[in-house]
Length: 162
Image (cartoon, rainbow, N blue to C red; front, side, top):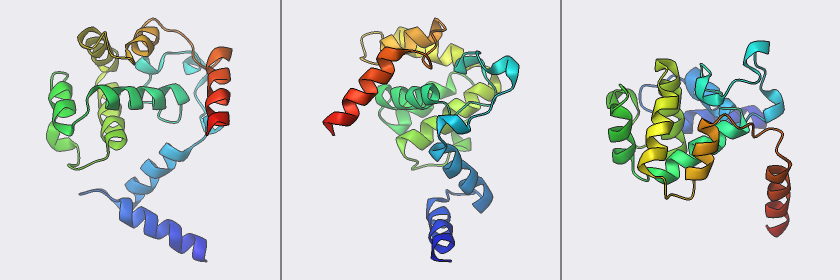
């Protein structure tokens, strides 16, 4: 009983302007899904996240892309100005979102418009000296991040340091 009450309060507190409780619950659930929970149609299992519709937010590479974009475009204003080049209406994004929520919404809308790859390419070209640029380039080249043992080793090493 207390668990359900706590979940309900979290959903209510995380609800954005104009968002229904169900939409907030789905958004929160998508952020917390583990990679094992992601189920893709057979034809999309090996497709780049830049070409998937809807944006595969449960995918670890997609989460890394959200964080990379949030580190490149540090303010909401910069992010919305950038996304406007690709047909994203700034009024469709709730104001005051956290950077990860903002970029989740922007990447989701870019994927729906079929312009996600184009936006990532433009980001890479504009910020090629950014530390996240190599990740963006590898993503554009179609590198698979799921089977890379160096990423797993790096993650284990980072976890030990904490």
